[in-house]
Image 1 (cartoon, rainbow, N blue to C red):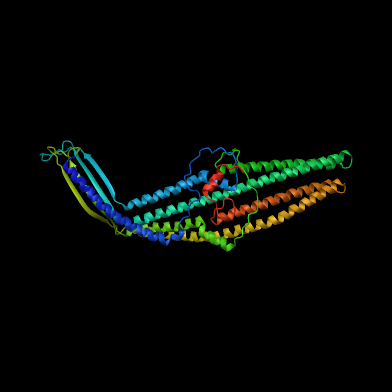
Image 2 (image 1 turned 90 degrees about the vertical axis):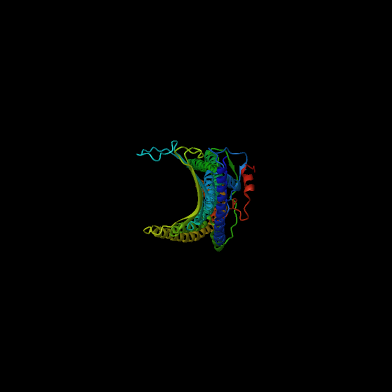
Amino acid sequence: MHMATVFRTRRVLAAGRTLARLGGVVFLLALLLCGAHHASAASRQAPEPIHPGGRTLQAGGDAAPAGAFDMAAAVARALARNPSLGAQEAQARASEEGRKSARGAFGPKLGMTYTGVKQERKTQPSTTRPPELGTYSWGVEISQPVFQGFRLLNSYQKAAIQADSDKAALRRAELAMTEQVQTEFLNYLRAEENVKSESDSLARLRDQLRITTAFYEVGLRPRLDVLQAEVNVSQAENLLIQAENTRDTALARLNTLLGFTATAPARYVGRLDHVPFRRSLEQCLEAAYRQRPDLLIAAKAVEMAGKDRRMAQSDYYPQIEAYYNINQTGNTLDLQRRGDHGSRSATWEVGARAVWNVFQWGLTYYADQQAGWQVTRLRHEEEDLKLNVGYDIKSKLLAVHEAEKRIAVAEKGVTQAREAYDAALARYQEQVGTNFDVLDASANLTRAQASLTGARADYLTALAQIYVAMGEYHPDLRPGASPTMAKAAGKASGRAR
């Protein structure tokens, strides 16, 4: 290597270190400003996602493992394997990488150019001829932004806010998936209970048909009673088929949410047991305003709009950057040999550039005003969302209380309907009651059982909805602390009950 090249390389490195120090100072000041900004917004930090991350794409769905899934295990499985959450996680990670990319704009930039030009020029008389092999030039420049009208700072802060917003969006998607899985799980349990109820009804009606047929054969009952009993058996069989189809549809939907194929023979176990909920409206509202991800996303949208306005305002200020460059020119590819009709030169330059657009016919002013109105719009939308959150919590809490009251009424109705059926059947067997009384009492008992099942399922569904409306994660709908994802994932692997 030529001594001149070594000297120039050392000079470039020395200048690079100088500008790197300047870039470090600029970046440190930016971090201090960013730290002051985040300290003022510490109460609005994005909540951590429920799942630890690292979701992988499973094309086509998985086969169901051995064992059974309860509600908590089903929720954990869906959070780990549902493709829609994988897409949301990828978006959150992309935003985090975008934040890092915006941070890199504070540092120095190194650029290099190399050109080769061949000229043919004819002059009379010939005084200067271009180099026979052409002209070649090589340049290196290191530049460091010093002041960009706060554009770089606001661009970085906006990227950081976007990363927080997308993290909150992932949390919102996970809560929505939790509610969806819990709702479908409860629909499946409801369908299972309805299948049992319809099976019991069919068994009762078949027993009644057998008794009525026996009475008819000995002449104690008319043929009309037998025909009516047969009609009711046919109707009960039809209702049982519909209930089984509803159950199988709910099973396929639940399989899809958990990342299984729709035909996978997965087993889901659980009961529609009552889970107490004793929070007041004020407690629910306080939790919702503090924890709901969509409120955080709305606040972050206002902050990002504010950063957009400050970036638009950066054109009011001059744009200043420091630079250092070296340029070499010669008539050979390696820029080292002189020709008969060429030249070889090397120059270096250090300085600062300032560009200031003083007048642009209102371009910056109206862009500033446009961004300002966008901030106002998003603030109004944020306030509207807060009002809707209050209504949402109130309506879901009323749904919880309504379903809880319906459970007490339905339990009493089942008890009365069963007593009525037993009495009607006893009267019929003693020949003092009619077949229509027994069939009507059996239908009332089936309806009462379906009403109780529906009330219990509606209560638990309303409970799942209000927990999500408050921004809380309760995979098994219990009011205590949520289990860790590691424990829930262990359940999801197929723990047999």
